Length: 345
Ligand code: SAH
Image (cartoon, rainbow, N blue to C red; front, side, top):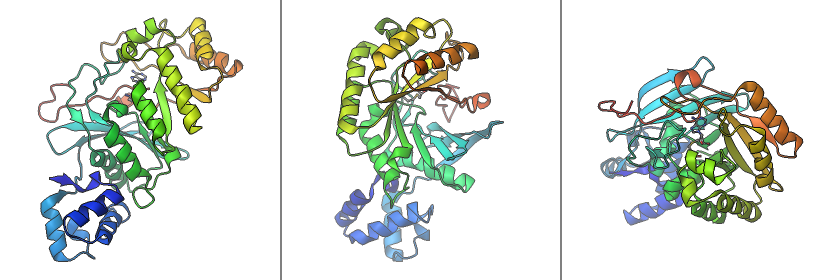
């Protein structure tokens, strides 16, 4: 069955014309889903009974069921959703003074194989559809009676590896008649798929781009992130420079500090050299140790030293607040769990 949440408004209007309905009916359906936030076609009472029956036969509303919900002592909530085909994904809700931020997954599993990430080593199953990305937001809003104000594509998966669905989802999330979250409140994080960065620069979307950099030499980065073999640091940084020139948008670089691995003064110096002159921001993440992982957190003292050194040399750097680590909801701790037999958990 087709998923009604896979369609942005224009696409839904076109779809309705194809099934012999007036485009304004698509507007009404969109309004029911994203404004009234209903979960069934039966509730769309300004549509004829006949049309509601027709929609019920052709489309699913794709309402996720919550398999499991864990709440951290800091208020962060981690959801395990049943995506209705036997698979499950994780989504994390974080609460900040400026509102609620949701960390969404873009794929079931991940192909990138980053050594420090818990999503690695589990089987890649498939891309999520746009509707399944959008539903993560709606399901969390329903469960908490809240409105999400920020969305980050930092859950499971590589968003630029599921390019079309992610960009279409962003259009639905950003559409004033859709979820209506400003593009500047939406971030895509990538491990560094250079062609995707160039493609994204051509889209007319003002979302924030985050680059998971994590190392300053090709040797070290390839060791941590196999994607670096295909797109080494020079190519990645050039793509970022071109992206900034084209979009005038600031890029955010993620740098997860691991003890005695990428956290010394020489790394800081190379990072400054790499990023010099770019409009950017560095997000330092104390690396979260994963089960059987080889990387451990840098000391707090060292992280502060690293940040201060960058700031003193003209690179704006902040330390990411750690949320939800007690429920395995912090950066890199998400992993797809198998709904049927938990064989990957
Ligand atoms: N595939 C995308 C988005 C998912 S990962 C990407 O690579 O950017 C989201 C962020 O968490 C990335 O910056 C990733 O490098 C970081 N991350 C992954 N594992 C981590 C860990 N164990 N500790 C800290 N950050 C981690």
